[in-house]
Amino acid sequence: MIDRINKNEERLDSIILILKTIEEDLSIFKSNKKNIVLLNKYYGSKNWFKDKEAYENNKIEKIKAGVLSEDAVWNMNEELDSLIFEMKRIVDDYYSSKKE
Image 1 (cartoon, rainbow, N blue to C red):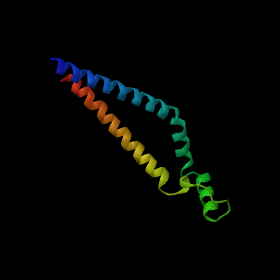
Image 2: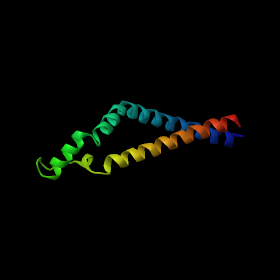
Image 3: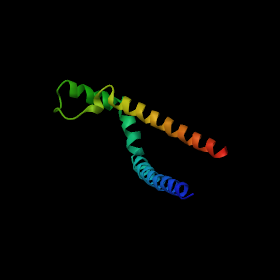
Image 4: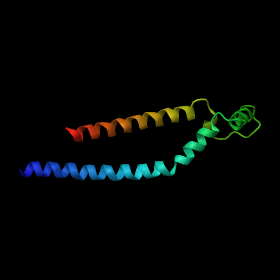
C-alpha cells in the first residue's frame, strides 16, 4: 500500500512540474503569436522579394538573413503545424481516456 501511494505521489509531483513547464511555454508562445503572424505576412510579400533581391545582389550589407531563404520560414511553419497537430492529438487522447 505504501509503495502504491509513494509511486502515485511521484506521478503527481512529476505531472505538476510538467504542467508548470507547459503553462510557461504556452504563455511564451501566446505572447509571440503576433510575431508569427507578422513573419508569415512578410514571407513571400513584395517587401520580402525586394529585400531578398537586394541581399542577393549585395545592395545591402551581409547580415544574418535566414528569413530571406526559401526554407527557413517554411520549415518553421511546418514544425509549428506538426507541433499543433501533436498537441491536438494529445488533447484528444486525454479526453478519450477520461471517458474510459
